[in-house]
Image 1: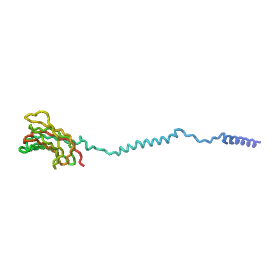
Image 2: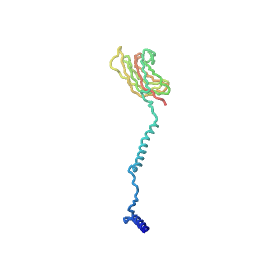
Image 3: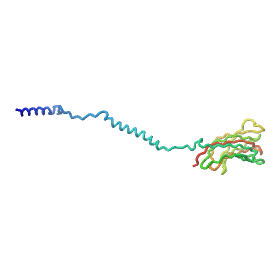
Image 4: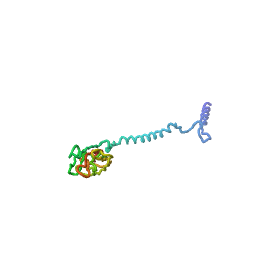
Length: 215
């Protein structure tokens, strides 16, 4: 009798585990996939975004580390060149000039500093005044180079108002140009006057520009 009761009890428990009519699933057994937390779903996206951002900022940083510094060697203010010469046509020579005396035609030459080795002079401006004995007037004003001699450009002059005294007239020079003088050579300005010997009196002329590396 005791064994029968034990068997009935076992059969009752087994019947409770038999598949149910709704699809044959156990009432006490649920075979389902464990749910993944939302934070785990975003982990791959967060990692991809971090990699993309890192690549975005790493490229400019790498470019900056590879940048080559550039120096503007043609900057006018870096290597300026300036010269000023005052001439007196009644003298054969002086500081930075020489002239032809009568009875030769009235001609003077203003001479400026030699261009250093490895450099090239860029001439940008010529300014000054030339005084002549009236009614004469200046001839052509020429920018030249010496060693060897080369004519570069003819510079215009203009009559300034009024008489400067002793029957003399003053002409102005104000020219913006772009000419070049090579290393070892030097710029000169030649001044003349028409017509008679002694018609050129005196004057002062300045030249300005800058030096660049000659390559």
